[in-house]
Image (cartoon, rainbow, N blue to C red; front, side, top):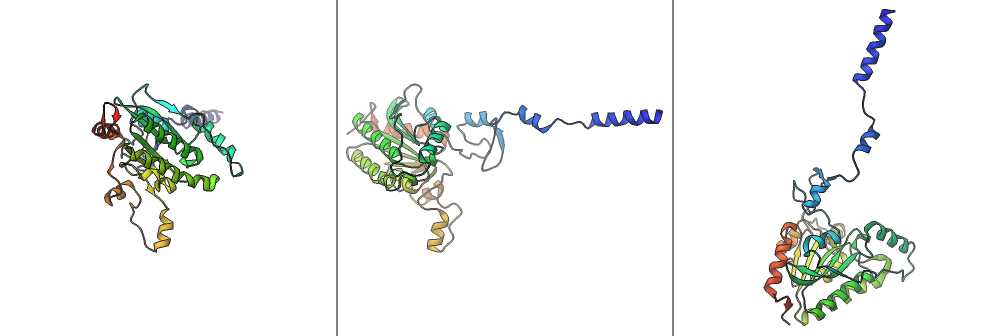
Length: 293
């Protein structure tokens, strides 16, 4: 009996000693999204700290993608931003299957009406017109509404006589709109040419990724072409180019650093220095908040 009692107590003690908390309970204690893993260095950090650092990795400096609203907040003077054409939304001119449903899903997910936000605001007291793309909406693809909103923003900058700044983040033309999407390349480029002929200042800031028809049109037409560190910038993909020319490409091919080295960019600017850089450019060209036409 004593032996049985001793054995029973020992078993109970072992169970208590090696008891563990169920994994499901642990999951409930750690809210989703509280931590973020850097895509480059794999370091895990608090999402809140990453956001405070403008979504730049605190360990390796990798620039994580920003939403259009986050970028505007980080650059524009508080309370000065006025959005244009917020209610403008895409339709389905080619009758592409499930296109409307996909657009509605992206609107719910991002809170945006389309893949770009346009409007006017001030950067250190200097008035500008902004167009900021958001890669979370249809991969920032360029459809008819994106092209129309950019064109209207350029025309508004011309009307106000203020600089035009565009931030690109796009996978290129939107396949669901076919030729109508490709037409936006000529449309936006023509609008920029008219604005430039009037003496307007164009600043293009390319972010990750800027590819396809966007990189081949308005993204590359700035008086100043800037880019964030490590951004993918190019027209066709690496595999297509390698298959076409039958050669291996450098590891850093189509990065912002590669383009700077080969004269296709004016500067690669860290997100921490971007507002100061934009202000310095604006301050050189603008007197009293207006372009010298």
